[in-house]
Length: 362
Image (cartoon, rainbow, N blue to C red; front, side, top):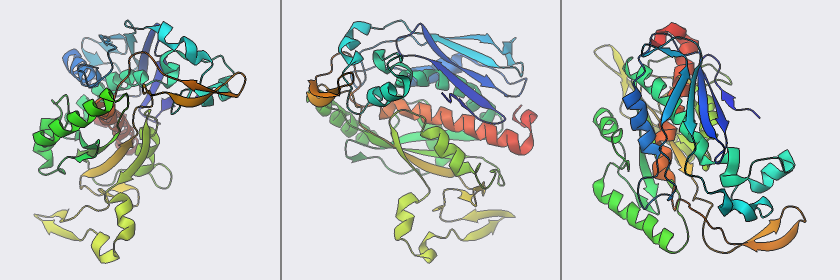
């Protein structure tokens, strides 16, 4: 399995949803970066299940760092983050040893691992594995903030309800980074939460879209052809369970524009290039332009729903039905946004280290 991403700064994930522990290893990060345990805990809380909008599984998600940090600073060697699983109920998954849950990786994992995979709670394919990514991402986010680079993600849509777009990105990002339910318009937050609750009460689930902005990135970052800013971000973002689409700038809407509408015309203010539009998402030729890098991620509805569904017995390949039990999220988009922030930070750190050298991040 390919559980490592990154060339200069890399992250490796490990563990299973109902195993003893999960975690991540962050390698290649510059020495001398302050590691704030309080900020790591804050980021972990943003990913946690804390309300009726999420699963009833309650994990403390206390992060234990067992290498790579000394006297509160990174040493430059691999940082290992370990997070123990404590609130597991494996009995809820007994039937799933042979019944493939629609929308989950049960069937495809069976085909690849021939029944040796840990199926409990989705095993290694569970969204639970993203907890290690968030822990590692907290260190990356801190390093970027010290270089004047900020990342923020809001729930652009959920359950058919749309948030307002980014406005003043600096203030919006600062606001979002402390929000449990990251929406820029508080009224829209209430409507989204009502849609999630309605789906939950019907034994169903909803998906949504996340919009991310990265500000403060210098121009000239990105390695064409195949390590462009878009290609590496998309590659890593698609590793997040439930992500089914990624678009940059105007994205698919650009296909319906004229060139005169899509082009971001340049101007100059005090010798600094500027543009009134950002349809290309701050990236041209796979390289940053200095404008905000903006992209959107589509998150599918949580596949674990309580309605009876048609499926197959993966041992006999015969038709059967399944009604999932246990504790599941009616929506995961609000928890996924800090994962998107974390993945983005790790990819950006990697690309900056490739462009300017490892120690640039210090």
